[in-house]
Length: 190
Image (cartoon, rainbow, N blue to C red; front, side):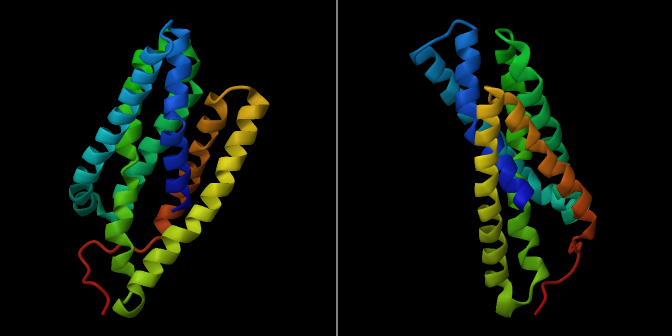
């Protein structure tokens, strides 16, 4: 869950600022840059909706762990690529940044897996509490990551590298997924 929150905050919160920087580098300032930032946000949101719609099929086809692994792999690759490489291409970066945002948004649907998978792991008497605890507890860690990204932005004088480094959370998440309980095909615990 912590990896997902790192990706959500890194992958989406900083997109408008990154697009504004890239738009200005391409000579588009003021309202034009703001409009591009809005379109970037719409694109990433649209792609996330598509990912959420694909999630049930992926979860049945690949299993819960496999689907989460698929989304985490997308996030690992595209957070690192989008902010670590494409962001630094300068003026020609903008079209490529938008292409990457689609995949970043689709991978951002990793949250949808938890709404399916977490309730399947706990019995009825604690299902809601377990879900609430796991989603809320991870947000505290995510808040700390936000401060680390901010310190990284100050250190590097750029938004790219610090946000790209949040992809490490997905690498760690991919290593931990095999330890999760696979619930595909099982009935809910009583």
